[in-house]
Length: 163
Image 1 (cartoon, helix red, strand yellow):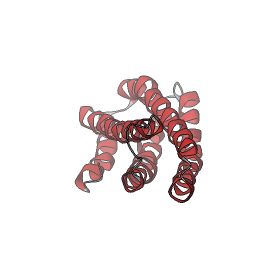
Image 2 (image 1 turned 180 degrees about the vertical axis):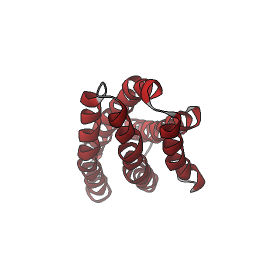
Image 3 (image 1 turned 120 degrees about the vertical axis):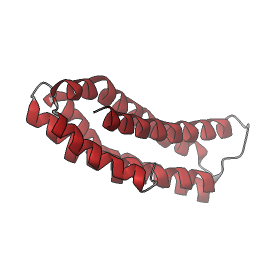
């Protein structure tokens, strides 16, 4: 159980670090303390599109959330919210990618700042729900076999050097 939870929390820390870096980078550019680096921002956005969207969220849905629903209905409302947020997240990423393109072609830093801040706030809130609401319920209700399945899925993320 602890191994799976540690991996999930480590992924949250990694995602949070990149998002915080994006926010701070653009805020400093908005304040005139630096020039925004589009190459750095593209790399950071690529990470955010890859790790949370293509690796982390699908495994939460397929393993952690599915198994928790199987064991209890106490988490149903929060799981519904989180799964809906997983569906909304790609649109926010698309908005961020479009804002980054506008910044590169038109210098529109304000729109980029808005898009990055919106996504970061959305994702920070999302991860807080998972850690505050879902992980404690999972610790209470999932079996050792369930945790083994979750761990096996999430440990592949570490093996592929994605995080």
